[in-house]
Amino acid sequence: EADIYQTPRYLVIGTGKKITLECSQTMGHDKMYWYQQDPGMELHLIHYSYGVNSTEKGDLSSESTVSRIRTEHFPLTLESARPSHTSQYLCASSERTGGETQYFGPGTRLLVL
Amino acid sequence: KNQVEQSPQSLIILEGKNCTLQCNYTVSPFSNLRWYKQDTGRGPVSLTIMTFSENTKSNGRYTATLDADTKQSSLHITASQLSDSASYICVVSDRGSTLGRLYFGRGTQLTVWP
Image (tube, rainbow over all chains, first blue to last red; front, side, top):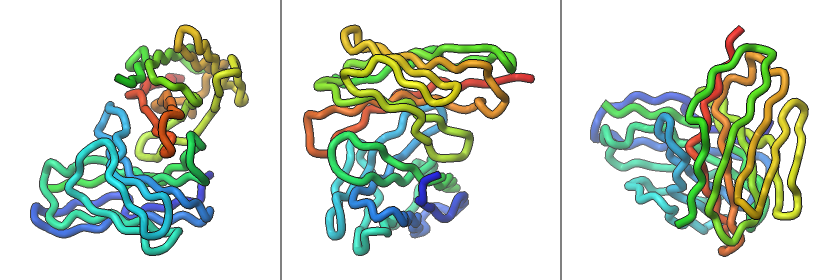
Protein backbone atom coordinates (compact mmCIF):
# COMPACT_ATOMS: atom_id res chain seq x y z
CA GLU A 1 0.00 0.00 0.00
CA ALA A 2 1.23 3.48 -0.89
CA ASP A 3 2.50 5.84 1.81
CA ILE A 4 0.25 8.73 0.95
CA TYR A 5 -2.17 10.17 3.47
CA GLN A 6 -5.11 12.50 3.37
CA THR A 7 -6.96 14.24 6.18
CA PRO A 8 -9.70 14.62 6.98
CA ARG A 9 -11.31 11.54 5.44
CA TYR A 10 -14.78 13.09 5.73
CA LEU A 11 -15.75 16.74 6.15
CA VAL A 12 -19.17 18.34 6.48
CA ILE A 13 -19.06 22.11 6.50
CA GLY A 14 -21.28 25.12 5.99
CA THR A 15 -21.28 27.44 3.00
CA GLY A 16 -18.73 30.23 3.15
CA LYS A 17 -16.23 28.44 5.40
CA LYS A 18 -12.56 28.20 4.55
CA ILE A 19 -11.22 24.65 4.39
CA THR A 20 -7.85 23.01 3.82
CA LEU A 21 -7.51 19.40 2.71
CA GLU A 22 -4.20 17.90 3.72
CA CYS A 23 -2.10 15.50 1.66
CA SER A 24 1.26 14.05 2.64
CA GLN A 25 3.48 11.38 1.14
CA THR A 26 6.58 9.76 2.57
CA MET A 27 7.91 8.26 -0.67
CA GLY A 28 9.98 11.31 -1.66
CA HIS A 29 8.01 11.71 -4.88
CA ASP A 30 8.53 14.93 -6.78
CA LYS A 31 5.19 15.00 -8.57
CA MET A 32 1.90 15.38 -6.76
CA TYR A 33 -1.66 15.76 -7.98
CA TRP A 34 -5.17 16.63 -6.84
CA TYR A 35 -8.16 15.03 -8.51
CA GLN A 36 -11.88 15.62 -8.08
CA GLN A 37 -14.25 12.68 -8.45
CA ASP A 38 -18.03 12.70 -8.37
CA PRO A 39 -19.96 9.42 -7.86
CA GLY A 40 -19.89 7.22 -10.95
CA MET A 41 -17.74 9.67 -12.84
CA GLU A 42 -14.12 9.75 -13.95
CA LEU A 43 -11.35 11.47 -12.03
CA HIS A 44 -10.62 15.02 -13.13
CA LEU A 45 -7.20 16.60 -12.58
CA ILE A 46 -7.56 19.97 -10.83
CA HIS A 47 -3.97 20.72 -9.70
CA TYR A 48 -0.51 19.26 -10.01
CA SER A 49 3.03 20.02 -8.96
CA TYR A 50 6.41 19.03 -10.40
CA GLY A 51 8.18 19.75 -7.12
CA VAL A 52 8.75 22.35 -4.41
CA ASN A 53 7.43 25.80 -5.35
CA SER A 54 5.80 24.40 -8.51
CA THR A 55 2.00 24.41 -8.89
CA GLU A 56 -0.09 24.16 -12.04
CA LYS A 57 -3.81 24.07 -12.80
CA GLY A 58 -5.20 20.87 -14.24
CA ASP A 59 -7.82 20.10 -16.84
CA LEU A 60 -10.85 20.91 -14.69
CA SER A 61 -11.27 24.47 -13.57
CA SER A 62 -11.38 24.71 -9.80
CA GLU A 63 -11.79 27.55 -7.33
CA SER A 64 -9.37 25.81 -5.00
CA THR A 65 -5.71 26.69 -4.60
CA VAL A 66 -2.68 24.59 -3.71
CA SER A 67 0.81 25.13 -2.37
CA ARG A 68 4.00 23.07 -2.38
CA ILE A 69 6.42 24.37 0.22
CA ARG A 70 7.79 20.94 1.12
CA THR A 71 8.25 17.89 -1.09
CA GLU A 72 6.06 15.70 1.08
CA HIS A 73 3.16 18.11 1.58
CA PHE A 74 0.58 19.33 -0.97
CA PRO A 75 -2.43 20.95 0.72
CA LEU A 76 -5.54 22.13 -1.13
CA THR A 77 -7.49 25.15 0.11
CA LEU A 78 -10.98 26.45 -0.59
CA GLU A 79 -11.34 30.04 0.64
CA SER A 80 -15.14 29.98 0.66
CA ALA A 81 -16.83 26.60 0.36
CA ARG A 82 -20.03 26.26 -1.67
CA PRO A 83 -22.43 23.32 -2.17
CA SER A 84 -21.05 22.94 -5.72
CA HIS A 85 -17.72 21.96 -4.12
CA THR A 86 -19.28 18.80 -2.68
CA SER A 87 -17.25 15.94 -4.09
CA GLN A 88 -14.49 13.47 -3.35
CA TYR A 89 -10.95 14.86 -3.54
CA LEU A 90 -8.11 12.45 -4.23
CA CYS A 91 -4.43 13.24 -3.82
CA ALA A 92 -1.76 11.28 -5.70
CA SER A 93 1.99 11.27 -6.19
CA SER A 94 4.46 9.79 -8.65
CA GLU A 95 8.19 9.42 -8.89
CA ARG A 96 9.03 11.26 -12.11
CA THR A 97 7.54 12.68 -15.27
CA GLY A 98 6.18 10.73 -18.19
CA GLY A 99 3.43 8.17 -17.64
CA GLU A 100 4.66 6.57 -14.44
CA THR A 101 2.34 4.99 -11.89
CA GLN A 102 0.50 7.38 -9.63
CA TYR A 103 -0.13 6.34 -6.05
CA PHE A 104 -3.38 7.58 -4.58
CA GLY A 105 -4.38 8.55 -1.07
CA PRO A 106 -7.68 7.37 0.45
CA GLY A 107 -9.49 10.56 -0.50
CA THR A 108 -11.45 13.23 1.34
CA ARG A 109 -15.23 13.23 0.97
CA LEU A 110 -16.43 16.83 1.25
CA LEU A 111 -20.03 17.83 1.84
CA VAL A 112 -20.86 21.53 1.82
CA LEU A 113 -24.26 22.39 3.20
CA LYS B 1 -10.42 14.26 -28.48
CA ASN B 2 -8.65 11.83 -26.15
CA GLN B 3 -11.17 9.57 -24.47
CA VAL B 4 -11.44 6.36 -22.51
CA GLU B 5 -14.71 4.42 -22.61
CA GLN B 6 -15.47 1.47 -20.37
CA SER B 7 -18.16 -1.17 -20.48
CA PRO B 8 -20.25 -2.38 -18.89
CA GLN B 9 -21.03 0.48 -16.53
CA SER B 10 -21.94 -2.03 -13.83
CA LEU B 11 -21.81 -5.78 -13.44
CA ILE B 12 -23.12 -8.26 -10.88
CA ILE B 13 -21.68 -11.76 -10.73
CA LEU B 14 -21.77 -14.66 -8.29
CA GLU B 15 -18.77 -15.54 -6.21
CA GLY B 16 -16.45 -17.95 -7.98
CA LYS B 17 -17.48 -16.88 -11.49
CA ASN B 18 -15.23 -15.22 -14.06
CA CYS B 19 -15.87 -11.87 -15.73
CA THR B 20 -14.32 -9.59 -18.33
CA LEU B 21 -14.35 -5.81 -18.34
CA GLN B 22 -13.76 -3.77 -21.49
CA CYS B 23 -11.92 -0.53 -22.23
CA ASN B 24 -11.73 1.35 -25.54
CA TYR B 25 -9.55 4.41 -25.93
CA THR B 26 -8.70 7.08 -28.46
CA VAL B 27 -5.69 8.53 -26.64
CA SER B 28 -2.82 9.36 -28.95
CA PRO B 29 0.14 9.21 -28.88
CA PHE B 30 -0.20 6.21 -26.60
CA SER B 31 2.26 5.58 -23.77
CA ASN B 32 0.73 2.96 -21.51
CA LEU B 33 -2.52 1.61 -20.13
CA ARG B 34 -3.27 0.79 -16.53
CA TRP B 35 -6.11 -0.89 -14.75
CA TYR B 36 -6.85 0.44 -11.28
CA LYS B 37 -9.11 -1.02 -8.59
CA GLN B 38 -10.98 1.46 -6.44
CA ASP B 39 -12.74 0.19 -3.35
CA THR B 40 -15.65 2.27 -2.07
CA GLY B 41 -14.38 5.28 -0.16
CA ARG B 42 -10.75 4.60 -1.05
CA GLY B 43 -8.26 5.81 -3.60
CA PRO B 44 -7.49 3.78 -6.75
CA VAL B 45 -4.78 1.11 -6.56
CA SER B 46 -2.84 0.03 -9.65
CA LEU B 47 -3.41 -3.58 -10.77
CA THR B 48 -1.54 -3.81 -14.08
CA ILE B 49 0.36 -1.61 -16.50
CA MET B 50 0.99 -2.35 -20.18
CA THR B 51 3.04 -0.54 -22.76
CA PHE B 52 2.58 -0.58 -26.53
CA SER B 53 4.58 -3.76 -27.02
CA GLU B 54 2.82 -5.81 -24.35
CA ASN B 55 -0.44 -7.60 -25.10
CA THR B 56 -1.05 -9.39 -21.81
CA LYS B 57 -0.17 -8.88 -18.16
CA SER B 58 -1.27 -10.87 -15.12
CA ASN B 59 -1.49 -10.01 -11.45
CA GLY B 60 -2.82 -13.00 -9.54
CA ARG B 61 -6.42 -13.58 -10.61
CA TYR B 62 -6.40 -10.43 -12.75
CA THR B 63 -5.28 -10.67 -16.40
CA ALA B 64 -5.23 -7.62 -18.62
CA THR B 65 -4.93 -7.68 -22.41
CA LEU B 66 -4.08 -4.90 -24.81
CA ASP B 67 -4.64 -4.61 -28.55
CA ALA B 68 -2.86 -1.41 -29.52
CA ASP B 69 -4.03 -1.69 -33.12
CA THR B 70 -7.72 -1.60 -32.25
CA LYS B 71 -7.09 0.48 -29.09
CA GLN B 72 -8.90 -1.96 -26.87
CA SER B 73 -8.07 -3.50 -23.52
CA SER B 74 -9.81 -5.99 -21.28
CA LEU B 75 -9.47 -7.02 -17.67
CA HIS B 76 -10.37 -10.63 -16.91
CA ILE B 77 -11.05 -11.65 -13.32
CA THR B 78 -10.88 -15.35 -12.57
CA ALA B 79 -12.70 -17.14 -9.73
CA SER B 80 -14.16 -13.92 -8.32
CA GLN B 81 -14.19 -13.25 -4.60
CA LEU B 82 -16.37 -10.98 -2.49
CA SER B 83 -13.37 -8.68 -2.05
CA ASP B 84 -13.31 -8.09 -5.81
CA SER B 85 -16.38 -5.87 -5.42
CA ALA B 86 -15.08 -2.46 -6.44
CA SER B 87 -14.87 -0.02 -9.33
CA TYR B 88 -12.31 -0.96 -11.98
CA ILE B 89 -10.88 2.01 -13.81
CA CYS B 90 -9.02 1.98 -17.12
CA VAL B 91 -6.39 4.72 -17.32
CA VAL B 92 -4.44 5.61 -20.46
CA SER B 93 -1.33 7.76 -20.49
CA ASP B 94 -0.15 9.78 -23.46
CA ARG B 95 3.44 10.63 -24.29
CA GLY B 96 2.65 13.91 -25.97
CA SER B 97 3.57 16.05 -22.98
CA THR B 98 6.10 16.16 -20.18
CA LEU B 99 3.26 15.66 -17.70
CA GLY B 100 2.46 12.21 -19.07
CA ARG B 101 -1.18 13.09 -18.79
CA LEU B 102 -3.59 10.41 -17.64
CA TYR B 103 -7.02 9.88 -19.15
CA PHE B 104 -9.48 8.11 -16.89
CA GLY B 105 -12.49 6.01 -17.77
CA ARG B 106 -15.59 6.22 -15.60
CA GLY B 107 -15.02 2.72 -14.33
CA THR B 108 -17.01 -0.50 -14.21
CA GLN B 109 -18.73 -1.07 -10.88
CA LEU B 110 -18.37 -4.78 -10.10
CA THR B 111 -20.47 -6.42 -7.40
CA VAL B 112 -19.74 -9.98 -6.37
CA TRP B 113 -22.58 -11.75 -4.55
CA PRO B 114 -22.15 -14.80 -2.35
